[in-house]
Length: 255
Image 1 (spheres, rainbow, N blue to C red):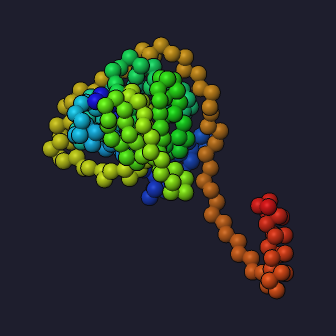
Image 2: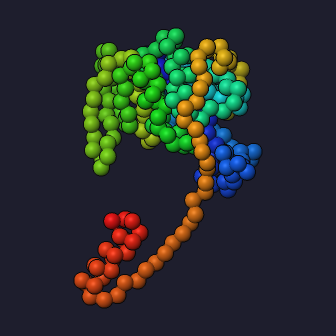
Image 3: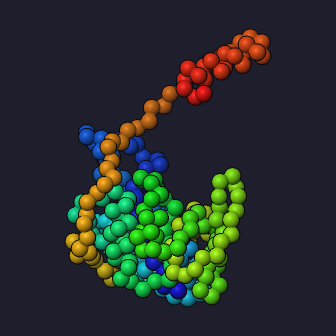
């Protein structure tokens, strides 16, 4: 199988103090550590498992600056074969444009399967992967938690709302978005990481793809949610408490 995995380099913000730029269009990133987007890490792990089971090769693709090559090298250290970095002149935030850029590159590549994470941990749109499938006119399915190959089809198990499970048969070539936790993540050895530093990464300048780069989705503003709490004690009989509760919920626009 020829597998393409789309990876994104994202800042680790879970245990960092987040500060906004003056125009509130971005966060201050100077002291943040970047790593593979968590959901994409599971897409990479799925590709490695499929390669071990059925053979083939894995090509990693990322869109970003020179620093984003680090995540490709982590992928090499784990067992990926090839890496491509699309260099952007400035950060693109429109998920549909990102999908179009990836599609323009991928349509000229040979592949059986494209794997992505469900969403990115920074913007959390969950749009790029589905748009990519549509631009490439590929069958796709989302929230995949199990994959097996059967002839020219993949048998996938999806996790739906409320704990429901769906089994689906999808024809190759196709695109799958992978649910976190599908497999335990492997760690790259120090020796493998050292070897990965010498591996070639193909660089493609965005202008080489010859496509219109107009963004139609714009980020208006970041804001840090306020932490607020209000406790109201309601006294009276059961009927009085119920009436008071309904009145409060209506006043707050919940009912």
